[in-house]
Image (cartoon, rainbow, N blue to C red; front, side, top):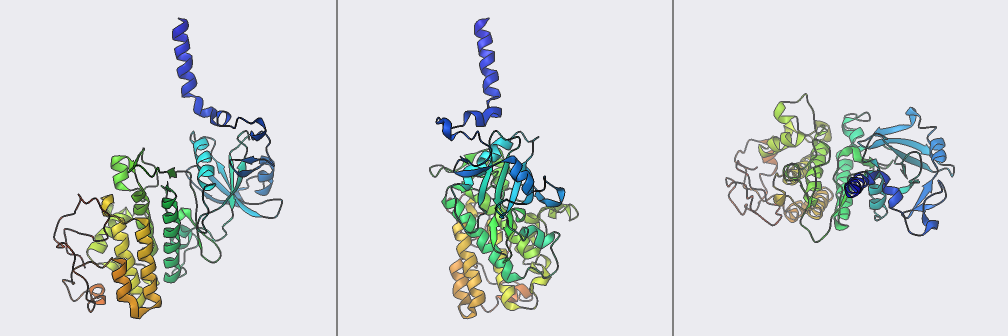
Length: 405
């Protein structure tokens, strides 16, 4: 009976150990334990008192809310030293809030990049609430500007959207080089400052990715509309999962449409499906935001079509057919160069390796006519071949079962 009692006690202790994570995950040196609410350092970041952050946000006034996420509400605040901050208040009812709290601290203390939001500090592990303090980014999110409360037709110009795409790709390439997968890339997590420079935020779902493994097996997590279908089906997280999500972001930037819209046709509720269908048919005019100058500016038209084709490659169901974030970043930079140096456009496009397609089948299409006079290299495989699903090397060439423009 004593032995059975001991076993049950041990199992109970193991099951509920996560609720005491912070109590167990402290340093052996008593002086380093974050017992004091303010003025100390925890995991390399300053610890703020709950009372200071409560005061900074006017007692978490609803008027100070900047947004709500899966793990908490973010408030605008002003510290006693005059700095403006964003304070994330993790939901009490979320049983994973401790894990998300620790994850963001662990990830953000490793990183320094101009396009990643900075973590200023947090509350103590013994505080009544778990709060994270970030730099305040004043101009809202990309989602706000393309289909949210700050969206007005033509307000976010194509050059600005192109810069947003490049800076976001730069941040993701840096994360992947640091063995980190973001796992929740979407316009709501891409913040903009007053100059429309990007700050990627929200690392609650991010994962450290060991460089000696091909994937991490984990239950799929993320936002509907952005979740890599292969990750969803096979439970295998890779850096190509971020590439897929970024592909959806690219489509949102060129279309100004939301990733999920229940009022669209049932086969097009998911923006990725809609985009794959329109791009494959070269029906760009049915996808692209008309206020971007697609019909009036040939330079803009060329760039948007190239970005659309790059997004098409990022959205491939087979992750092996998707480019890496380094390749995506390089392609975007080459497309942008084409805008500034039109005499070098063809070289830039060839360097980006995103025009490996056959000559157009129909000379009447406006989008096809755009490329009519370009001597495009032939695709290494016939465009009528099936998907090359056995490829083990990422390749920018896309092979489809129907004609490619």
